[in-house]
Amino acid sequence: MRRIELTVEPEGSFPVPTANGYQIYGAILSALDGVDEDVSTRVHDSSIGSLTNSGLLGTFDGSRRDHHKRVIGDETYTLKLGVADPRDQEVFQALADAFVFSDDTLELADGDFRVRDFASTNTTHEDLLEEAAQTVSDQPADFELEFRFRTPTCIQEADDITTMFPHRGSVGRSLARKWAETVPDEQEAKLELALTREDFEANLIEKPDARSYETHSILVNRVGEGSDTRPIFAQGFTGVCSYKFKNASEAVRTAVTALAEFSAYSGVGSSVARGCGYTEVKINS
Image 1 (spheres, rainbow, N blue to C red):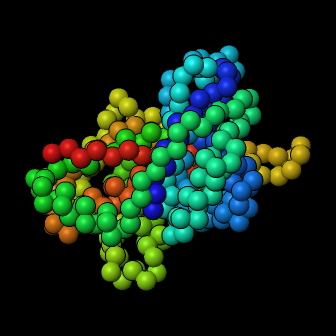
Image 2: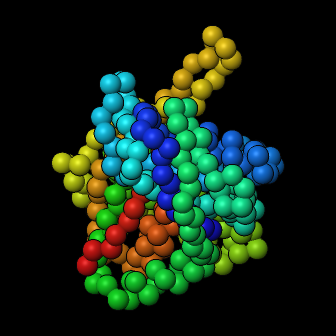
């Protein structure tokens, strides 16, 4: 698994959607197409959300266009990507080829960004579990995991219904499913986290920050062709929510902490490649 951070500079000032993850996703696929069509197709067709995309992070001006903001010409912006795909090396190499060794431009609808820096870190599921075990041994039993849901987080509960609240059961189950889908087959028995929704509900208490909590409807796809094209929206939430352990065993605390750290690579919920579910986690004693 890998985390990739791109530092980009806009070529002038121009508008971008307020929630620009979907447009960034299209630009990334276009760049991947130019260097490795197979990887581009794999990312697009992945059922596990093999790429997590934060959208542009930085300072923006207002825009007269509805649902848009304006990038500032002399500012730099950050784009954070997570790669949880079991074949992460292939995805990483294609991204490096696109933004380091080939054309270093990210082309959006109303303007382009030049990629000025490309940095990455990598880990494994086993490493995350070992680090989590060390964290648990260093912390009091009731420590908190603070989740900052930076982009609309859309967790599908059943059919087309998504949760609009960072419930511990919904967030935990989403991460546990992603973990199970991305663990290498040869290590599945060793690294399995046998946590059910009921385990998250029985061992955690969620403490949402009401001042930061918002709900959203975000563009995640377009279907059809020509004049028949219609947008597809997903509903979700942003904000800060802390999860505190309550009488949880060491094994449960270790597993949940590993999943929290895993979220930086996998995102939370659906449509993570299209800018949903980008999450940052902090541990509070």
